Image 1 (cartoon, rainbow, N blue to C red):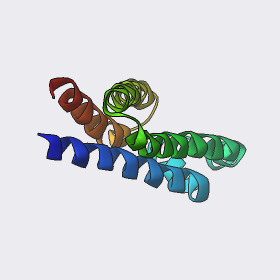
Image 2: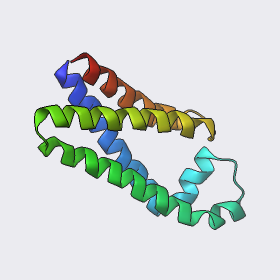
Image 3: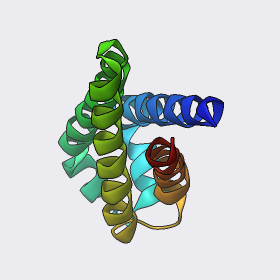
Length: 119
């Protein structure tokens, strides 16, 4: 069970770094894939890509740094962060097209959260 937890947390961290990369360097691609924005709206919202990118990178870095906390604090911190990721993934999926956010963010975060609660 612990192995599955670490794999799910690794997927959460990797996914956040991946989305940070896409949002910083490939905003037009990710915006076309997830929204119904026109080309003009995509250009006008490029600053949002960098903002979302810093959010995703900070979540990934924060989860990586949490591994140096003592065990009880580590478990609590990671559980809270995973729960917040799950909630924001649901909210984010409500405003986007398709199930990309649900698949890429909600599933690994919620699996890791459930395992952390069970173990």
